[in-house]
Image (cartoon, rainbow, N blue to C red; front, side, top):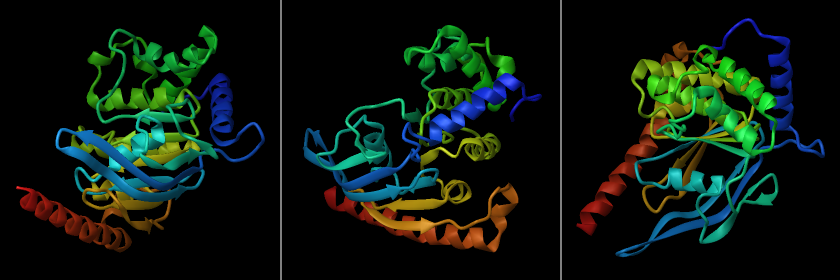
Length: 292
């Protein structure tokens, strides 16, 4: 989906982006996530609700990890703790050895429903993060144009979000998240509201972008095919309270194409995940019946 030709200026911006996303000031790799003994509890009218229980997870720099599980299992809640939107009741979340206590530019976020500013153009939306970080107007717009070109939307720089399709809006959201040079990209069911064909195209586009930058990606989904197709690892969570019950290596070759979806190795991984999710979904139904 990226535009051609590639200008020298765009190459310079992309090279800088790769370096910023992957390497800290001391030369160390960026993007390591550590979740240790994390409980997340919400107060409700009926009392405390344990959303995530004793979560332990390490994500290596540059890995693509999918969080998979039945609805309400705490996938998005755990991601929000990594993002800094939710504070654990106990335990700790770290990114690159620093405790997460609030959102930060080292973690880019893409939501299921786009969060673009409707009164700003596409380019202004993407340039917003760099401007807030103190980058000059010319440089911020140059970065915005580069990332819009990367996601194939350079021709829509002056358009407003409400004139774009859902898939295009999500591509703008990805460009905006990347424009801050994050070492970690957090994606909460970003393709869940798209039609099947657009979703497939977005998955392929995302893998192309990840292949360019190799940011650490944590991707929440309830779609098993999507998890297997995209990830290096699939972390499966149980029915509420959400616990990590499986950590599955996805050793399928890269780059990946849609023909992979019918291969024996793909189907074996899909069956393994399906069995786990079915068991947890049945457990959730049983809990609901008992509560009723």
